[in-house]
Length: 377
Image 1 (tube, rainbow, N blue to C red):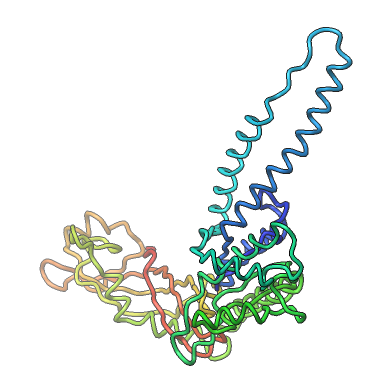
Image 2: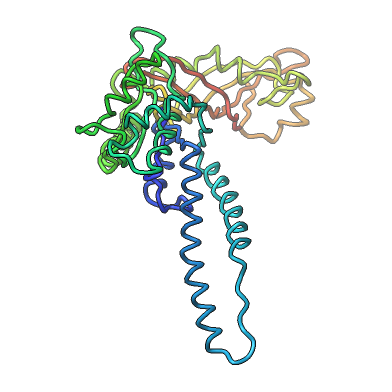
C-alpha cells in the first residue's frame, strides 16, 4: 500500500525525527506501507526551513547592531545574508534527501499536468482550489493532488476493488467532504481516468489513523506472531504442518548434500563423507517468527527453524584415521563394510529460513519457500 504524506503531516519536523514520522517509518515495513512524499512537499519543507532561517537571521542582525552600538572601537562584521542562506539551504537539501533515503521515504517527481485544465479548475474554484479565491493559494495543493492521481492505475478487472493509495493529510478544507472522505469532485477525476473512485483513500483524521490503523494493525500482527510462537497456528495456518511439508526428506537431502556448482565440493558436509543419506529426521524446532503485511495486504510469515538429522555415510578408511578418529560425535556402524570403506553415522543440526505468503486473514497459504542457512556439527 502506498502511503502519501502531505506537508502538514511533517510540518516543522525539519529533520524528520518527530513522533509521527518515527512511528510511521517503524511500522511501515511491518504493515506493507511504501511511504512517499510529492516533490512539491519536499520543496515546501525546504522553503519552511529557509523562512525559519530568515526569522532567526533577523534576530542575529539585531544582536550585531546592538553590540556595535555599545562598542567604541572596531565593529562586529555581519555575515552576508544572501550567501549564508544559500549555503545553509544547500546543506539542508543534502541532509533532507539523505534522511528521506535512510527512512525509505520516496520522493514522487512533479507530475506532467495540463496547465490549461489546471487553470480552468482554479477559475471554477474546483477542489482542491479554495471556494473563495485567495491570490496564489491552491496551486501547490493542486499539484499534490495531481501527484496522487499520477500513481493511480486504471481498473484492470471488475473485481479489482483494492485501495491503491492512502493519502494522509490534515487539510480537510481542500481535499475532503463534510464527512472527512475524499471530496466527490476529486473522486470523479479518478473515475474519469478509468480508476475506481475508492482507489485513493483520504485519511483526514490523522490522530484516529495512528490510534486505529497503525496501532491496532501492529497489535493484530503481534497477536498472530504470538499465536504462531505459542500454539503453532492461527486461523487455518498451521505452522507445524507447513514446516513438515517443506522440510521433508527429499528437500533436505537435495539441499544438505548439494555441491558447489563450480568446484564440485560439498557445500555443507566434509568431502570425505561419501554417499551420505538421511537415516533419521527429528521434528523441526521454531526459533524465531516474524509477521508483516505486504503491499497487497497479504501476510508474510518468516520463520527461522532448526531440524536435527542423523546421517549415515561411507568413509574411506585412511580418511577416517586422518580426519575422524578423534571426533567423538561420529559413530562407526560397520568397520568392515568392505576392504576400503567403513559405514558411520553422526547427528547434525540444520538451520533453515522459511517464508510463507498467506491471504490477509491467514486462511490460505499462497506460496512458500525454504533455504538452508547452515549445517552445524
